[in-house]
Image 1: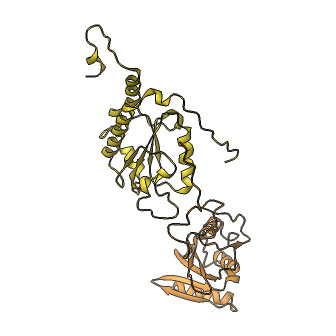
Image 2: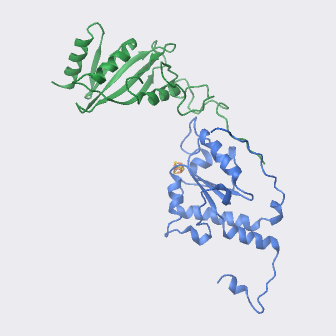
Image 3: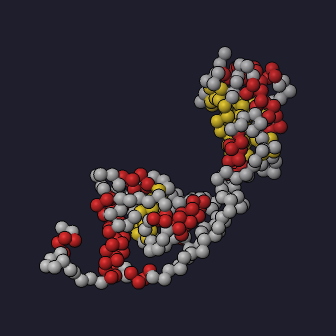
Length: 163
Length: 173
Ligand code: SF4
């Protein structure tokens, strides 16, 4: 059984009431579903005997700028048992927040902080949602499409030049 | 060769204090290696036997700012890092000089981006801008020689009454 069949079978058996969109692009599997199920499904993917996606490699996001559901949060997870990775995609509106998966994968903690820093997506029940790269008092989210590449003048403080 | 050649007759020679001090200073410019990114590799290369920065009296890379004369800022300075660079510069004793090594440090280089300071002269007084991405070690040596020339022209009394800067005390950082 190849990965796509296995994941499809497992997920539809376990969660018959949830709509899954499982797509395959260049042998990379992506699973899309509604954001409210993120923690339960993540937990299942991690702890199921046959799947064991125990490693969360990255959490990031895509900013579609004009779409109604503005962001897509993307999770890259890896299974050591199957030696393969899949991608979870969840759409989020600009004003919404999403449940944190750091209770499932510990590494998601920092990845989610980075996503929050760069896109301004807030993760509910995150243990420590602070900025990762930018200074604490910075007001913008640099990877959003409406943020100018050269930044906003004066938004980042420089040390004073004396003499 | 060196000083011995000047010792003719009874072994005295006359000079001015300015010249003597400037000569002493320029012959032992101890660098503060502020190696932040890729340019730092070339800075390290200038210390190896092939280029040998020791020929110019600058082999003592001091990893504490309190013992150094010239800060070589080698690498991309981000806004977040700029405060650290300035703090280290403030801790160096006067007189002090700064080499902005590489395109990034001088002008932001290829990083035309929100996070990178577009030239460290926005917060530091720079003496030499060094072109290249990265500049070759011989280019760094050239910059060092120009700094030495600049120091050679300086007057000892220019640095007589420099007040110590008031540095903010950071309690928990
Ligand atoms: S100037 Fe080039 S080599 Fe130097 S720090 Fe910038 S990118 Fe790296």
